[in-house]
Length: 123
Image (cartoon, rainbow, N blue to C red; front, side, top):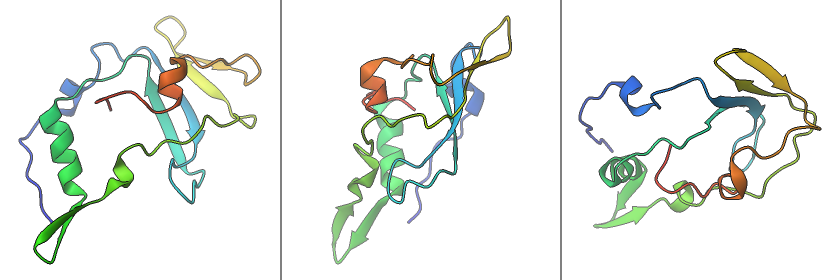
């Protein structure tokens, strides 16, 4: 299936300030939950329009025998917060470009809702 999106400049959908984010090596959010992902989490959510969200979902929608079947695995694909398992979480900052936070001192910087993956229409 093909979906056409209006061209856009990627930089324009990112936060004005890229100086505040967290980075860590983690796993996929869906089975088999392989530990192969480098996660970058912005401190502030990046808003997208409802139209952009629907366009994204349409890429993963299939048509079968004259009806549309939506692939629901893109919605609510979070799992309970996991242990850090000695992972290193790096935090960017303007003054100290990268500083490492030990897993013992790391607290959920994004709040409970973000840790559950409930961030609304954000990427």
